[in-house]
View 1 (cartoon, chains in turn orange, blue, green):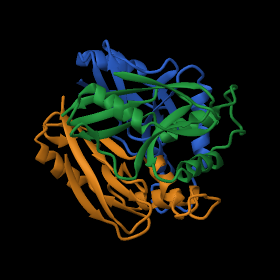
View 2: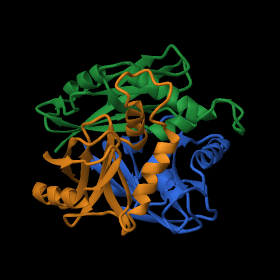
View 3: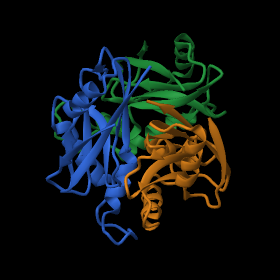
Length: 131
Length: 131
Length: 131
């Protein structure tokens, strides 16, 4: 299992981590199998979406913000219930097929950390299984 | 890894792919393990939901359309930011346990491609690991 | 594959199943790998979120209820289309890395069954693969 560290700069932000996942996969030596990217946090998530136009992930963050308001009748006193809820909507891991030692992402897909309560230091873990 | 092709006919549509996943699983020869169904696209997703009444997945599409409006203050110029956001809400893969060479879905569960920006030609990949 | 049974007491409720997942993992004997927790139902889901303050999961349930109304222009006659939609938003499984025979959850993470149409008897299956 390989861990890598990220630093987010905004409260809400996406970070393209595709290259870090690719490098971690190569370190595992797995050629045919699956790679798991796991997020050990509860106020950020991980997703796969378009890697070409950064407006897509910007729209994702704004769309989520309009669905899940920061201020609301939340009970949790830390004031970040919106971030916890977005984390469960987006999910805490992604699984990607691997062939010939490469990520079998579609041509428009990238892997994104979705920060919902930054700025913070974050970690992701990457591990792979052979089929 | 087995790929199969699908053709969607509407902008928003669900397609029951359970039988195709089952056939792909049999082709892998895995008897006890897990099967991964991966969607390499960024404007459709894949989910597990009820296989009995087609109104359930019709309601899912309408519910998502009312949550994520097609027209909005989106930046992405292709006009399909709603489809990208729905893809991240629904997710890009499902994992299903396998026993005795069969999908260990619950009695009411089916696997559905969720098209959010069709009609298009789509692909899904199916692969399996033995435990 | 290990199954365990749960009884929910409310229509909408979260149940912390982290300890049951941990015990099932130990029964598999897997020391380095991944564990899959799979929910074979279509009106409940499974997620990872904060294990410290129960207000976080209470807020998640209320936030989902305000996003997906129970009464709406739903077609499905059983009157639980909201529960089906929430199940697809939350997801039907979680995958967690395993090291030294332990769940590699973050310090604030727990695993939660999310009941959206209880009270009911529910099952979860747990299985693990070695890397």
